Image 1 (cartoon, one colour):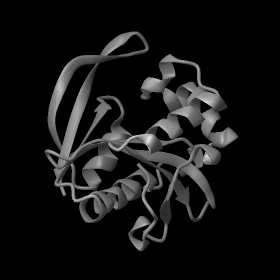
Image 2: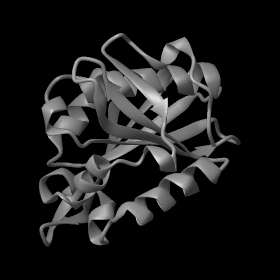
Image 3: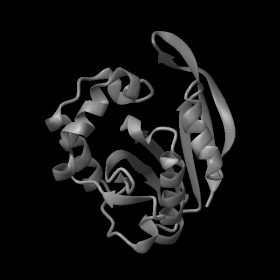
Length: 178
């Protein structure tokens, strides 16, 4: 699904933009190949190249249940990550968020928190959703912190749900009414 940008897509520090296959950059593909960046991403289990990333973005855009945005950092003046909403369940008014801040220069600057907050507004005002959820590896404290700063609360933990470097790791489940 693709949406048309509105003024709520920015907070002055960052802005979300519709991510298209043509917007897939060398930097984006490199993020997915970097073990430090992709260590909490399921995409790390398969090799990524421009064609596979473009196909992923095209697939999300073609889906009526998913939408993906690029995150543009105004100060850095570049694409620094992505945030995805989906699958969206219209019957229940819910959606799942996934986020990746790939540009290390944007780490620790509140970019994830800002992107999540903007996406919450889009979910409520433009998509009419009532609840959003997310999940993160227990050791991904930056991601959990970004969600909590955006009003999400821990709703549960799935013990040993994931493998991280070959070792079982808990999956933290978060949610928020919008």
